[in-house]
Length: 396
Image (cartoon, rainbow, N blue to C red):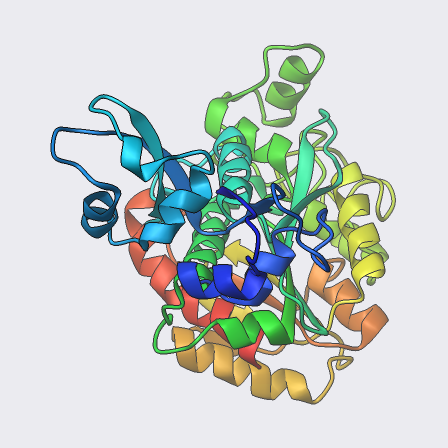
């Protein structure tokens, strides 16, 4: 929501008036010189939208403010030319509305288009988040990264490396939405105040690493050739893609990283297909390249990759994980009920490569239990299990 600066106004005053942390207002106006506010300048207030209200008989601005539970001066800030002594029945004014509900509806078959639309809406209401692209998929879909926070501890979460594990995307997106609501409304999550987390950490989220694969699983093969013919052929002639984990080229993106890639290739399929084909070389796929470039650029303190199946958390790789990884995974286990598993005979995954090259904590979190894709009816329960992990990833 935009407001108009008046003589004598300050960001601190806006923070007090709207009950929003000052830092969030500062971070919502990165393109504005905030050193000296000038009359008429536009300032964005996060966590609010302005909607139109029609003046009825007997209305006053004070009554409207009382009904909407907002300060009277907030109405003047969004209506800079309004004369309170000349209100007319039928006149339309703008009134601030504090957002206290989720914009993301995760409990549905959650598509790439829904995610892009939700990210656009979230950025409009919460302009302190940064929404940038880390690259494009094989079919040219943008792969977004969301960043928020001002702290030196750089933490990364990602979801939907595997196409039929798209359930992870609405789980991560719902956490992002709840975190934003908590920050702007200054309401705790599970008793935890989140603004200190914002000050301590910079959170990076890639909510859908594999958009082409997710779209294939949810919507079937693309209309365009040669992709339609190819993917059906690679899927053994079937148009049921519920077992498909790979990208649109039939490459498993979580077998694409240079961490004993050769050992993984030896035991896995040598041609494109629904799962486990690691490509002809490490980092051959644009989605994997984008994730590797992002990770090198951001220099994360630790990473959490969200997958589905098993209610376990994998936390080791070849004994290269640092000592603090065990204490961290034990906390993740405590807050979720998931089982910590140090290692399995698996290579070339994203968290494997991160542990190997940075010697920092990396985790693969396997949400839920049953079949892939997980039934959307389990969304609420699985989200509550994951919520503790999301929070712990920021406060540890």
